[in-house]
Image 1: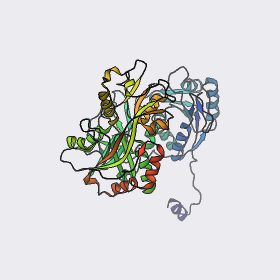
Image 2: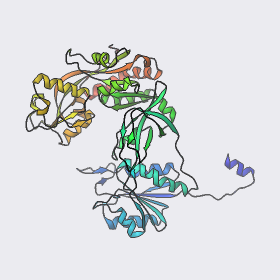
Image 3: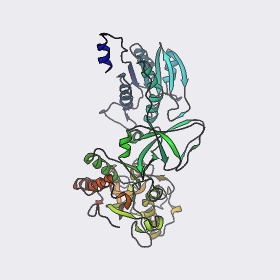
Image 4: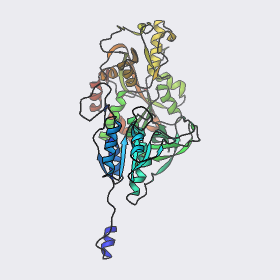
Length: 482
């Protein structure tokens, strides 16, 4: 419409601003190009693609430099070349104060360092400088830090070069589902998942940490915690910056509770069959899932809670913790639980009875997790005190995290599902077959999105994909058991 109005006014030429060129220089001896040969200690270089995509969204022309090793001279040469042809230069990694962090020294040598470190979390060790009148930013290598610093410090510069102001995001009022502690002195940026439950928007924090790449992909919104605050209380109402369209958030199904790989498959299949819907899962253990249902913070909970007295799963816990509530138990699968050990089982572990050996280090699941309740039951049956197990207090929140600890040699054994062991090439010692259910309040069973979820759950395509993982029985999948 602006073009039409200009022409209608008889103006055929107007001055314009050219798109700014942004050069991104990835640095690090450990980096390997995508598709390259990966050795122990290597990292696939992906940050430059992340930062380039962000720059392109803001109207810039991103130029990716080849990987530069950790060398003061080589980084200085790359920056010198880049500032001669670029409007903004981003040096990725090496912005901290370690012996191999050269970015600040390069900027100081070639130009002027305006700031090294800001009071934010993550992203604190950012470097802001000028070289030959060109803004040069040193951005940390951790992906969450890199993305946040790019947005906070590079976006305003890129927009200003185009005569624009960086667009602000829409904000919504949400209830925080669980306490989010924060340290005083730094403004903290926490990514969250959001869903509408019972007429109100509820937000739950995603895994925090500068290296949690998937938190960038999964997030629906951003919570900013002021530097003078010690965090956000459970059930407190706060404003959230939306990272996705509100319509997408409205069509999200929130599942809280025990982790299972099947939930990831269910989410993928749901998105494939019903592109407008998505499944968001938070892994806080089976008991955490029931408490989320009790507080009205989830549409459903994934649970596998063994009643030690009856040997049955889940039903008694619903009666105990959600009395008077009409909750449907929909079976997702029966699955094999056991001990995950290193390939070849070098410690010759045969069962839970070996966990108290002096040469065995164990890794556990968090309190309230169904897998931990199962382990405690098995230890009680074997007459073993948990205090005798080295590593019993070490906790992880997912089966894959436990498997990764075993793979990395941090632990010799951990309780988990067969599918997680197979995924990382570990040996598996079967302990029992358990029932994993989805607890769904009957008030939600008639929601169109829940009906769509159940349709996918009962589909042959979903069951086939679950079978391919190994260790699952889907003969009762989708049945309402209570």
